[in-house]
Image (cartoon, rainbow, N blue to C red):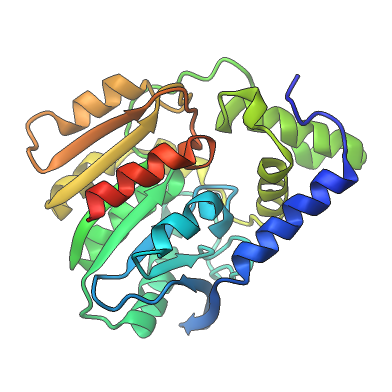
Length: 292
């Protein structure tokens, strides 16, 4: 069973307090493009380097990067959105399913960011899981990407290696069943070390799942990452957790970097899919080194 397997009101309160403390370090910006409001959070204020934009994964929110914010914003200005259709952002009016849904998402993301940092501003760009593929497609569309860093990116087109089925938490009959399903899914997909499934991981997953109105799985499984990386070019960091169940980490890294001297592959030992949470110090160090 996961370490955090029983409800602990104090642990939950502490986790929510930590989320609130990190959130309080940010400035909220509700930017609107074509009627779609996107909630952006800005951390740090260093105008000497390009802004660093980080996109979260499916069933996620800006909190997918919670354990990375303080380390990265010490030397960079971070811009973290809730993607359209997630958490505190509006959903585009188009049906939110399949590949057709990505274009209005990218339109809203691009239009709002350009209004915040300038349409001609060079940026560094990162993404996690579904957000990795979105980052690559966003970078391909926008251009002016200095460096691109992806963690456990979707869209790689190789086989997943999941051995445990996910549970439909929305079908739970009560909160206890829902909590158990969410914890099960954290262990099945997101985190390798069950000791990492703590009150903070649960709180982030719980809040983010309840705020998701976008079906991202079909988009992530449809591929397209390689073509987007090729189109963007430049310096690219492709990082996977050693035990990521969405890909065979060493194999996909080797495949993506082969023949591309501008690409660097990193495998984080002991980490699962949500590597930047489970092994935050190692991922932070890799990102800071790459982006320096």
